Image (cartoon, rainbow, N blue to C red; front, top):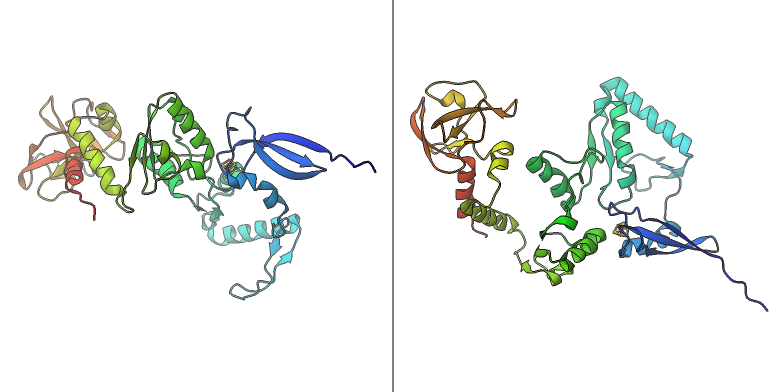
Amino acid sequence: MPTEIPSVRQVQGYCSLCIARCGTVATITDGRFTRLDPDPTHPTGAAICAKGRAAPELVYHKDRLKRPLRRTRPKGDPDPGWEEISWEAALDLTAAAMWRIAEQHGPEAVAFSQSSPSTTAIADSAAFVVRLMNAFGTPNMVSALDLCGWGRGFATRYVFGVGSVATGSAGGAMADIAETGCLILWGYNPSFSRITHATATVAGLKRGMKLIVIDPRHVGLANKADVWLRVRPGTDGALALGLANIMIERGWYDQEFVRAWSNGPLLVRSDTGRLLKAEDLASGGGSGRLVAWDLQANRTVNYDPAGGHYEEPAEHLALRGEYTVATKDGAIRCRPVSIAMRRCARNIRPK
Ligand code: SF4
């Protein structure tokens, strides 16, 4: 008896199960999605992770939700009494609830909630969720976020002034691994959590990039690192401050950037440990203004936090040293924030 040859089709695409979006080839056997493989012809298709490989199991899992469910019993009831409803009914119910709250309390009383764009399939829809929020009139979002995503999305806002607008949460400032000469993976194991960064790191190592891995565990790319720093869990802050101390001491930082984009030049009072304010000065000054020291003019310069600028050019502001400032409380020794931070960094000791 002739055996029937299965029909096999391969479809190029990408895995949407996390924000890495690895290029993939899906195999369809007799109309059924049977396996997912990397697509080496795709820019992000060098490899896929176990979650991507499990895509067929996710698609056909018996517990996968394919239609909306509505709770028919009150919250707290051990049996929610889920009842399947149509998409139209789900949309009508949701829209009616949103309008009811908006009419009673204003649209800002509605908060949208979404899963982490870094590690779930919401990544491709996150920008549309933000668009809907904006159109509806609320800025409020609750979003789960992975530790690496918080650092990338919010620490970068503090350091560079930008995060991501598209996702409303994170991901805007992404490491440029292809161009970097020295990469630090700090508490980040992309071999498990972002395969495209892992393959980019391996490519970087091949062209001579240095790799520093900070992780208590010797896992993933720690095996390939030039330097593996095995911090005790919970001591990352001490290591960061220790590095900051060395960088400040040796001048290994961009002074122009620190003057223009950080609070490094602002003076800290030695008597209170607080920022010196213009209204503290014997000469008086604008309310709410802060104060830096101009090395060339040898005097104080005011900073307007609301406008985000100094009242004079910032190119000669002191980032080191100690200065005596005439205040309403008498002569006070003051240091720039960058030096106060270094003292703090020098004195830190891990527990
Ligand atoms: S890292 Fe894994 S889950 Fe994320 S896109 Fe690639 S294959 Fe999919």
